[in-house]
Image 1 (cartoon, one colour):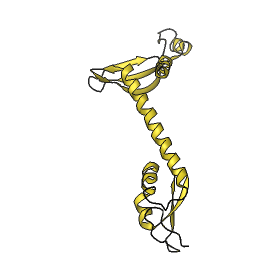
Image 2 (tube, helix red, strand yellow):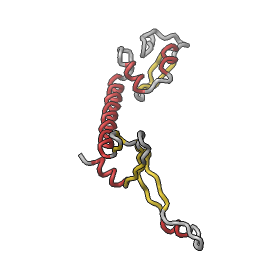
Image 3 (cartoon, helix red, strand yellow):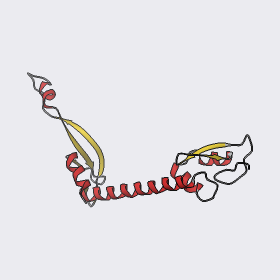
Image 4 (tube, helix red, strand yellow):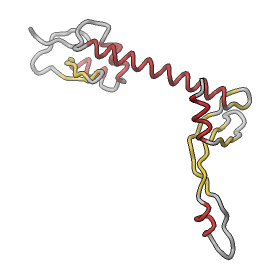
Length: 149
């Protein structure tokens, strides 16, 4: 039996066979489908390849898509929880990440030695996109609050 394109079902000639990876499964594809899907995301490829019955190992592709959906739901829940915790001007603040801030101060006599001895403090930084306000939070407390139900 001749090989067929996993996306469109076209019969593949000997020199017209290319491959693309969908959910860690290598699929044989025609030149046209390779051109169409080479820059597509894994999720988009997997959704499109399951529209027909030519895919290799469709169970693994289904499992991949289900995991992607679960991950998206977890991320959505995390974002909603974060929005409830940190808000300004009636909207959620944008998290900018965790940054280290230098403690201590430079003095005329001792120079930067007090900075070196004092160390640094890690803070979670958030910005309001409407008014530009910046808020600093303890990243450890933020992690604990994100875990609470």
